[in-house]
Image 1 (tube, rainbow, N blue to C red):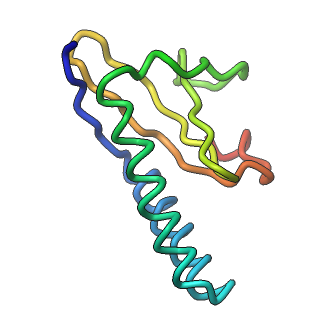
Image 2 (cartoon, rainbow, N blue to C red):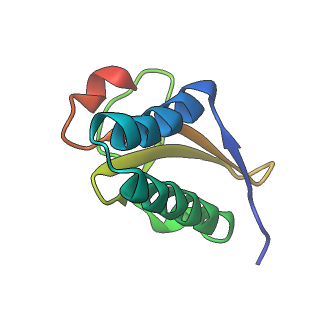
Image 3 (cartoon, helix red, strand yellow):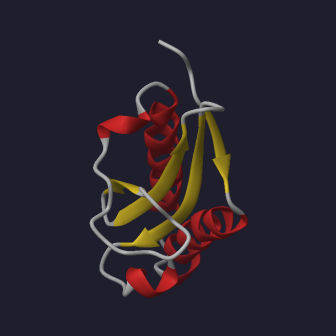
Length: 104
């Protein structure tokens, strides 16, 4: 099976660091922040081998056709697959209970 390359958008990188900072400093849970950091990275890395296994988000998003969603605990990772170049583009990582449709 051919391996896909994972690429993060600037927004996705910011989302990731915001999540970890929030848990660590606002919730004062550095241990949980570290666990979430590891979990998010591990789950995203799994996309290297079979990114199609997660559903296409059933939402209309301008400029984002066929955006997939990966749910990790309370967060949703939105990503697109570039089959021609074997790249998974991580677009956003958002809190599931937020009004995330406005942020994509």
